[in-house]
Length: 163
Image (cartoon, rainbow, N blue to C red):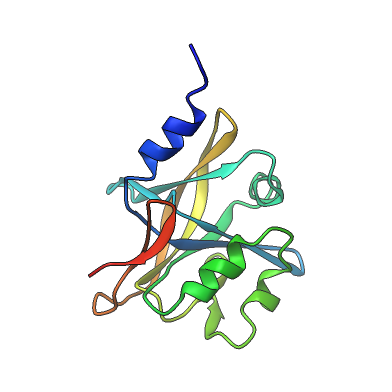
């Protein structure tokens, strides 16, 4: 049987996914990455899941730091998504220079303002899964919800606006 990586990638690109930025504070440094793998897992307790490449530095940090934040981006925040997706990106504080943000009171991670929602999470389980690591976290704080804003999504390999 041939490799499924190309057809699998194409098939999964057909599923729309919200674009979010995951951030964590590691000592004096702040790190973050753009993800489209945020999934709600449970309501009671409130649990979410993210998947990160196992070889990534952020994965290494999240294996030692349990508290992190997720900012679900809105229309107009495409530049933020691109900054946090770029290879070799600098620290999160530099990436958010000139962008409204605050430090989450529960996670101490940077939270992007102006999105559709932001949550703060504590990892409760880590699951190796192929070339990724899944982090299941319990939501301890909802920083804000702005249902009036338009969510920002990724579909068919491109960032898109929900219309």
